[in-house]
Length: 152
Image (cartoon, rainbow, N blue to C red; front, side, top):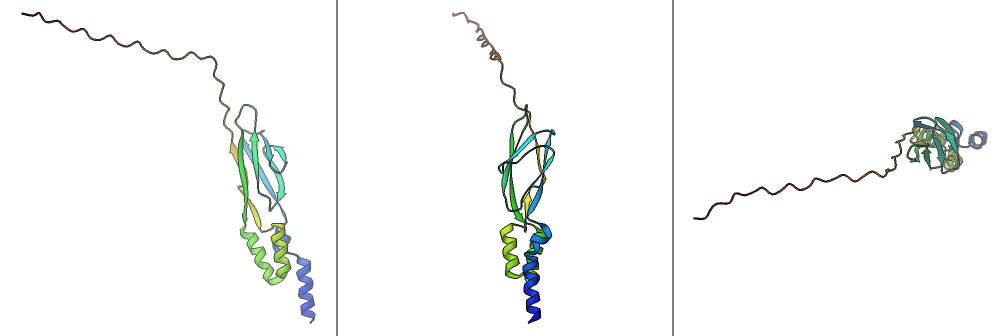
């Protein structure tokens, strides 16, 4: 009976193995070429590149990079089950039980963000056309002259 109580206490104390070992947030690195672009996420976070943001492991979002003189560029950041997250989740079979599995699933602690780092190469913005004259076409070439043959 004491083993059962000890196991139950350990299950509640550990919560979820992946939650304990990996945490519920992830560090996302944002990098642009050139540096100094404003990076805004759909989660209402913002920074100047290069920078690092902390986000919930279960959040998927987009990042828009902008810099004067360059075309804005957006990148989707998705989640997937990480190798170490799956191992932590599997550890619940031994220590966390159903409670641990539920905690890991609810917190997203088994997930990782891809891509990470989020990296873009910004393209220079096109210059507006200035009253550029239309190209001049060539005049058609004259028809070749034909020789007249005298009638006999």
